[in-house]
Image (cartoon, rainbow, N blue to C red):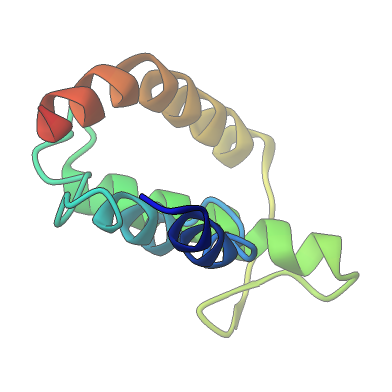
Length: 107
């Protein structure tokens, strides 16, 4: 790859956005992985549920970060300790499992 090609490619990375499921999929698409989440699941957490949970966390995070009323999919959303604890557990399991899952897809 030439220096100009590297510079051009690097310029596409300037706005990664928040780690939403869609942004993660888009980043791995650049590596040739169609859907990095495909097949990533564990007890009580399907691939679809994982993506939805990441989306909800991202929506709530964005609303809080911008000082807006908390909403999910345009509807008011009440934060509760039980929900936050569940998100923490999902994030922990995601962190424990994602690297090996993604690496298997790249190979």
